[in-house]
Image 1: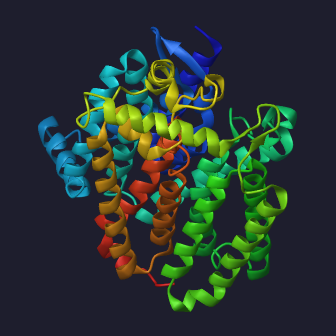
Image 2: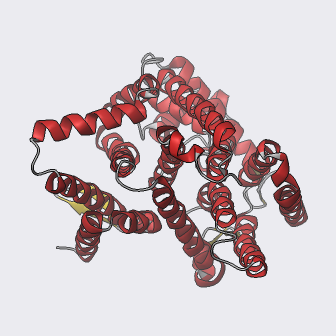
Length: 447
């Protein structure tokens, strides 16, 4: 047995025991350890990660606890009760999810072992995790559940940022840009930007409960400076644009009585970030002096190739070329239709086309992209309706975090990575929890 497999088993057992006895703490552990997906191993030839084992431990622990606590009831009754609760949470979104996930599953089959691995890691694992989290809503206060989720995200982001700023050395830098323990700096920005809004909501929610006013200001400034400095060193234009758009949305949607307290501060943050970015580099793109090319030119070529694949794929719109197949299909296209491109292939050798929407359309089909967009739009509408009723800052933060993902997805590929897929579904469940317990939230003291 390999060392990494042993670590995975120990982690799964620990999370499983906690999920049985203290599920809120177990949930925090799974989310805080989200980047344990970097520890990889194989089980009977099937690739897996410590993060996946943690998710399985949490789910199995919750199933075991449910069966034990309801042992006096029949198994059929337990399943029926659980099914009603799942239906209550997801019935509104089920048609859109089916339109999105069924073509995606077919695309996973087209993708062979790599495609099925993507289905397992980026769809199956996070979805069973949010189903297990959904079961907690009926036993624990929503505030405790979402506090555990947000705290876990913050801890993981702090570890990532601190490692990149102080612990990574040259190992945490790629082409002069901060990458922490990832392969590319873009991954840092993709993960960090949505969490900034959830972190602001967490600190705001606890400003009078935990900290004295002055200490609260100090802690908030330190945390935000660490995150913003990390984001600035990634030199990610997409990250800064996503942050600016979502922050503007945050300020616009904020009730008037919050505006003078947070709005001005938010504008200052946007101004500081913009000044840092424009002061550091030109906005024309990351320019490679050796190859005489910038990132925008490379993206344009990738997008052009992806659009060509979408238009000429006979399996469209029901499904695409298969999950994980873009790089190989793009390589074939480059040599069969060279007139489409002006850059050499070794500058365009990417796994994905640097666009969330093109990635879904080319690999899973236009029907999957339509289902995804329909699901997200429905979710955004329901979340804003919940915010209009409750004026709950977590609701607004989840909304803006999703906006940041969608904006960033125009020029990069969120979701298509272990931690980013879990992050997406955590934001989704934060919003759906609001709808399921709207009565409880409406009774909360308004900010």
